[in-house]
Image (cartoon, helix red, strand yellow):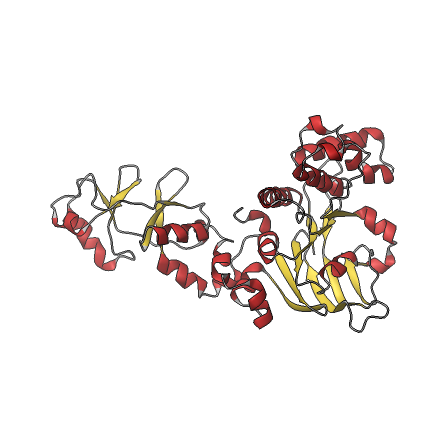
Length: 396
């Protein structure tokens, strides 16, 4: 399986699958393997996050892909080719690599750091310069910084340069070892969001290591949870991991707020909304009352001529002859289709209401979200399967 990255200066590049075939790593003198019979496949163009406690073998698993650590038993296939058939030097030039310490060459400029691998591959000067310019724009580094040295950059800027360097030769596979771990929390979130934006454009196959389950859920299309002793506890999408943990170890590792984490992966537009009975200002309330018995929502929502919500009719409003211009109950909170579902639920609970009108990008009524809808979704089979790719999920 492979996914094709978009055209760049160097043409489209296939993002190959990466398959672990009963991979074991034993270090000399160790009683237990660092990694035991790991079996999983990462589809081309997806992000697989390895997460687990210290000593679970997550970094070992990633480093065997480019043979920084040698396999004891089993095999790893990149596309259809075994890594054993390629030299470590070849693999490392063909794969991007980003680490927590960033690893920029301190005495080389930003441009020279990015150009490292293309120059090793023998690219001519014009092609290298064009690629550097393209990548500075892609990772949103001011071109004016190209001649500065790493020590003259902020931590976030250095990490962007590290990502640009890893992308320089347009690799199909990228290895990322706790890439945002050394950055402060606010910059970390910004870098995570920027990287997901980048992945939406370049669609690489990415093996990503972290110790943070929240980062894994945010960044991963699939997550491999490893337990101590290097054994795979569960390999699944974030939705499946959150809603159907394989055992007590996974459930404890993921945390008690699994349902809220699941809601953070989706937008209001991802769920089937209810329809409220609608009424216009000046309309006979008898017409509005007649809609209530068959309605999904037991309250009448007043909208203007352009279908913007004005408020809910109160019991007193319904006793009047016509629908008032100012309904007795505010429409707030008014949600948007693009809102993160977790935030929408928070708004409902904070307002102490069961129902909220949802509007589209123009502010026009699109449906109604209820606490019941969210509850039903979380207990449905769809909660396990309906999921966006990591690069298309809400950023937060």
